[in-house]
Image (cartoon, rainbow, N blue to C red; front, side):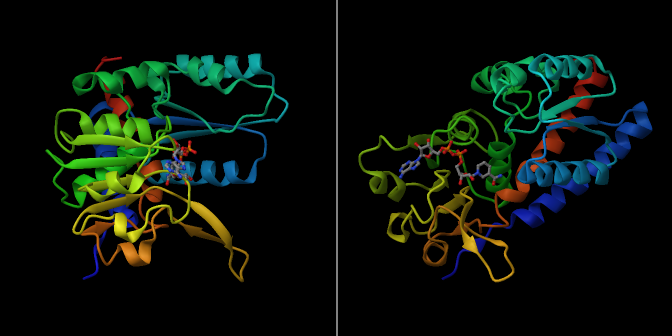
Length: 298
Ligand code: NAD
């Protein structure tokens, strides 16, 4: 039997509707709208399209949105000064610096210069630490892992006591989602295993996963026979395997989808699964930041 598809595009629309109402409520009650600045350095085409999508989504929700484009040759000091300006701007609740940055600028220095209370991407070491502590300490969970957790919860997958196997240990996906699923609380409380390039027998771990989260960046890495029947499979991988006749990239996940969907209970497609969730969670973090600023909690 074919698995239930976990449609990120549909879940995204539901969450965006919820956020839109929250923004209207915030404006009516407090005269405040969430403020997001997206800083783009240079003209990298992929970065331009990501930033454009973020801006369009923010505008659709009624945010105060600033697109701050800077030339490729901006100095590191000038970029740091710009971040400082937005750190101090009370109308701005979220600061996003689109990566990658040109080679003459230290990404680490720039990301660490963002006020952790406006770090809606959740990459600042302070927010990584808060995520590790868990509970009320968590302020801005990183967007892709937060999106994965929403997909798991909203698809009705039981997480309490579930065996979760995470393939990949990157700082932006694998490690944070593993920590989030192991924490106490709703949508978590799972028993988590992280597997990676140093793992001896990948298949044996994947086979016992009630929830398999794959973020390796290797097309078709997870074979159908590694999937536990009835499990929930979240495929984070986005791999360009070629271009179609219209010149558009053909995307594949890290899981052999066509075969896996006949074994899993629930599965995310690529594209249209995890992908649409990342920007949505960026918006959610920005709304949260605005509330925290209104309540004086930051
Ligand atoms: P990364 O390259 O930083 O990390 C990949 C991880 O997978 C590493 O920890 C590595 O140890 C592990 N890995 C790689 N090959 C493996 C193998 N053969 N066996 C076991 N483990 C292996 O990548 P990332 O940034 O975490 O991204 C992973 C994938 O998710 C990519 O395809 C990326 O495009 C995609 N991604 C999607 C979104 C989104 O949809 N919004 C966001 C972030 C990343």
